[in-house]
Length: 342
Image (cartoon, rainbow, N blue to C red):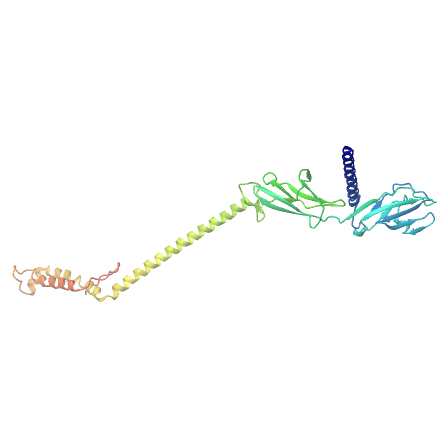
């Protein structure tokens, strides 16, 4: 008895699980979209039945009757709302057009001819054109697709207009050196539309050891650097030449001022001028004593013991005394014309 009760309980549990799965499956099918259409676009809901002239056709949207055609007249809606085969024609769709559409077909006696076959239509906004950002992260380069505020969109990447099948993320990382001249673009899409970005070529260095761009001021980077280096070297040479010329001019100016100062001091110092004027008379007096003939005629000669040395000794002693008492002479000018005694 207990065994039978246990078997019944297990059977009930299995049935309950199956019923729960069926309920979840039906709920998922109702919440899911059977078809998609863009906002502002068109869509045809198929009838899946060959409509007869004597039959009555009705269309419902979320249990609301939107079209009712009798064999002799149209009760709800207008003739352009359906195609000739009875399929529903939807135009200028809006977000309010989303929902469940169910067709109903009756014969003359009012009997339902077909089983209702519903279709859930989802109305989506078309995607906008995405942007593409490039970021250098040497030795790699990063490309990021910017779709904007677009939910439920997918992305695909293209390299030189060729699909990259394994790249479905919003950021793609590539080695900069391998894709130096390649063009990348992304394509975003939903169930109703798709748009592609502009192609972007990375402007990184293309190598992991350099951080310099390929171009500078519209020219090749190496050529522009060579031109700037040559101009900088020429400017440096001119500056050096100018500095050397200024230093030489200053030295010449100082030398000239020094010479003029020495010359001015030499002419304005009375002691130096007096000493220069007394350097020559002893020589003239010596020459006058060197003529014995003239001296004998003028008067008696002094004794030989006091001959020529005695008159000069007092003079030499006086000169030595004056020399010791006087201050050392100032530096004399280089080019000085000696004074002449007439």
